[in-house]
Image 1: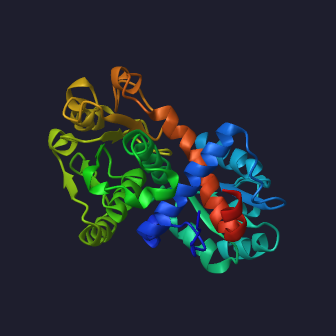
Image 2: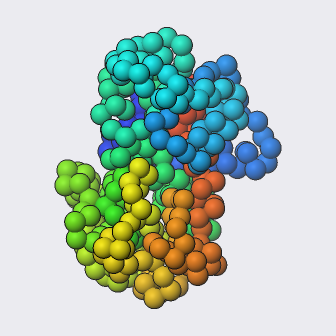
Image 3: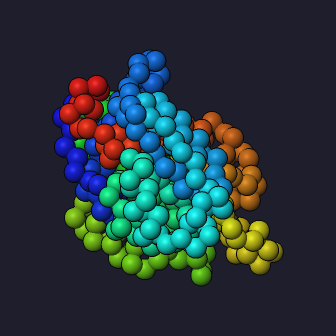
Length: 333
């Protein structure tokens, strides 16, 4: 497999071309196959990933820590309460110090600017593990899951993802126009996947993100829809997606917010508007019978645990491409 990848960081998928995204997904599928077969791939032997966490995590921490280990390296957990960044040290100083000690940084934090500044002042790859604005690693795992369910059953292989007609796919998202929605809209508009987002009034996605996505869609042929009508958004979708009604760090939804979001719940009725073989996706953790009913999330069309596992494989691909050697990667996969 020929590797042609020149990215230095993963700050936002807006920086990535369609070719870049397909390279990440192709490598992820190859590494997943090797993992399942027990084939070692020590592509980052002796390298260290600094993992900065300003927010608690299950999937992000475990997938990055296990991923760097499987690649032959080591993950160093850095809680902001335990390092000087949490005591007032600047991002600039932190970036410059860590750049002399580790080979890459993954950060899960609040402000996107902190991630961008790490890349600005550091000299090593920076990976956005989540910000309040974006969640690119989740979006990569999500699209990887859709490809596995909807495309790889045919003649498409990890070596020929560029042959997929993405215009035949539709992903529908219901709920808050948050970081997950932003990254899903971005990756779909880059690849040419049709994307619809149904949100309650007052919970729109950020304007500049959607404007960028419209420009992407104009080039890729993606149909981008932002609406308040859930049945319209989910009609004939290949995958239906939702997220919690209150993101991490926010208060639990009160009755007013619950009443506002209830029409956007993914349940048997709303899910019935999707294709009969549509899959259900959720970035997790989930609140059953709030944003999604147990009937759907635990039903036969749910792909949430394959999706969660794919965080590991997608992020291994990102680390291997950003922190490793493309020629070694070509030879190994």
